[in-house]
Image (cartoon, rainbow, N blue to C red; front, side, top):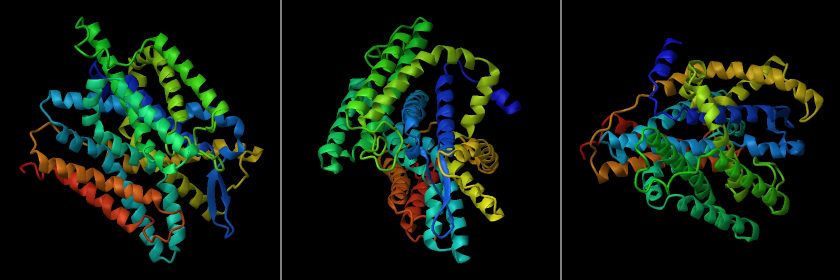
Length: 458
C-alpha cells in the first residue's frame, strides 16, 4: 500500500489517468466476459471440454457492442504510444531505442506464459499424455495471444504511423476504414483473401484515433496553460467535447443497426459459431462502427471520470491493476484450465448445459473461484510485469540496430501467428509447435540482448 501511495503521489499532472482507467476496465471486461460465457462439458472420451454459450444467447448479442472492448485497448494503446514516443524523443532518444524499451512490458510476461506452458506440456508428454490432448489444453490457454499478434505488429509501426498522422491527421484512419470496407467486400463477394489486410488495417485505424486523442488532450492542456494550439495541431486532434461524444455515439449506433439489421454483418461483435462472417477475425466495418460508438461514450464520460480519478483511492486501484494488467489477460484462461482440472480430479466438476437455470446458478461460484485461482497466478507471475524497468534514452547505432529490432519483433509475431494457425488437436508434445516456440524465443532473446545494451555500438 505504501508503494501505491508513493506512485499515486508522484503521478505528474500531465498524465492521462482516464486512459489508464480504460485499459484496466477493458482487460477486466475481457476476462469476465470469457469466464461468464464459458460452458464446461465433456467429450466422447469423458474428458472436460469447453465452448462459448453465446450461440445459445441470441438476446445477448447486442450487448457485445459494449463488451467487445479490444477497440478500446487499441485506442488507449495509440494514446499511450504517442505519449511515450513523444516523451522519449523529448529526452533525446530515437525511435529505435523507444521500440527496444517498449518491448519489455509486452514480451517478458508473454515469455513467462509460453515457457511455463511448454514446460508443463513436456512433463505431461513424458508421463504418457497424448500429444493431441496436450495441444488442446495449450491451445485453449493461448487463445488470448491472438490479440498480441496484432498489437506486436501495430505498436512497432508507431514511429512511422505517428509521423504520417502528423502530416495527414484524421485522413489516415479514414483511408484505413476505406481499406477495411474493400476487404469486407472481398469477404462478401469474394475472394476472401482480399480481407486479410483487415487484420492490420482495422486495428491500425483505431490505433490512429488514439494518436488523435493524444493530440486533443495535449491541446487542451496547452490551452489551460495559455499556450494555445501548436501549428498543425488543430487538424490532427480528435474533437473531444461532449457534443462530439454524443455525435460519435449516435453515428456509431445508427451505423451498427444498419450494418447488422439491413447489411450482411452479424449482430454479435464476438465469434458465434455458424455465422457467415466474424466481426473480429478480421475486424469488419461493423466492429469499427462499434468502436466509434464506444469512442463517443468514452468522450461523454471523460470529465466526470477525470474528476473521480483525482481521488487517491480510485487512482491507487487503477495503478495496481495496470501494474499487472497484461499478466491478468494472459493467464485468465489458464486459471480456468487449472480450476476445471482440479474439480474434475476431485470428481465435483459441474457440467450444466449452457443457458440453463443450472448454468446461470453456477456463474457466481464459478467467477469467484476463478478469481481466487487467477489471483494466485498473478501473485506468482505478476512481478515479472510489475518490475519491468524502463530505460533512459541513449544514442543508438543506425541501420544495424534497427535491423536487429525488426528481427526481434518479427520473431514473436511469427511464433504467435504459427501457434494461432496450428490446429487445436495437432499432436504437439510441447503444446506449441516447436518452430513457433523457437521463433518466439529467438526474437525475444534478441530484444532482451538489445535492452541490455548489446549491439549498441554497431
